[in-house]
Image (cartoon, rainbow, N blue to C red; front, side, top):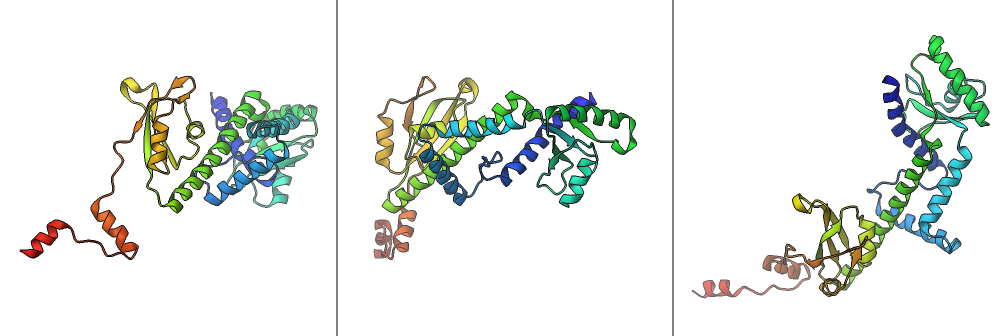
Amino acid sequence: MKKTVEESSSESDELVAENSEESEDESEPDLAASSTESDEDDDDAEQSSDDEETATPTKSRAEIIEEKIQTKYDKLKGTRLYVRFPQKIPEDEQEFQAKVKSLHPLVSKSTKPRQKHARFCLVDFKSQEDRDKALGDIKTSIETDTAFKGIFVSLPKTDSDEFVNALVTKQQLSVENKRTKSLMKREAKKGLRKGNFTSSVVITNLPKTSSVAQVRQLFENAVDIQIKPGKGKFREFSAATVTLPTTFDARKAIKQDLSLAGTKLQLRFNTKEQKRKPKDKLKRKAGNGEVPKTPKKLKKLEAN
């Protein structure tokens, strides 16, 4: 049972190690893309994606990502081991490489994670035969040699086609979400430049597996998209609030017949959208240098 727990915990460690390696190779996609990336990063990601599409117009962005990841791990398949030490690995590169190569003479090189307190790494070999022999020898040493006490070794998760496919899906979704954020930011800026108020619509029967990127494809000029899971008898669906640049865009969206994943969507105006209060109008006029008019009720009180 202990071994099963160790193998399970190695999966998240491997993702960190793989992400560290990706960051060093700019030609490879970033597998650790976050939803909290800065706007500048979003713009760079969009520009990079556009450049890739220009270079290979016959391939979609998703196909490019899949090809890169699949090609990389096809080359590495069968030549790596995942190793976790009982103590953190040395920060010095030479000390680190020396420590890893002391595990077995057939070790070619190793990839060190960026985390300073990491205890794990991925070890490379020149061939699958070397890898398999080293795996057997290291496991034997762990059982018989006290110098190997506390070391855990296993085949990397990236040898599994299922795991690599999961990486592909994760990266595709990450890139699409980045692009979605960038496009919504652009549309928001357009709305502000025009001085228009935003208005929103609500989708009440959205398929529960729907993503922000999928909804964004239906509303290309959306300023913001918020998705919440349904509750009670509506738990098989989600609800989405889509904010558009103008009330005209919202009225136009309501009139459309839209569907997603085979489900016809039900759209209505967002009745909970807050209306501008008189005080807000006064503040806005004051901010523009205008002299706000005195309300009628106040004029009557002053007259009395």
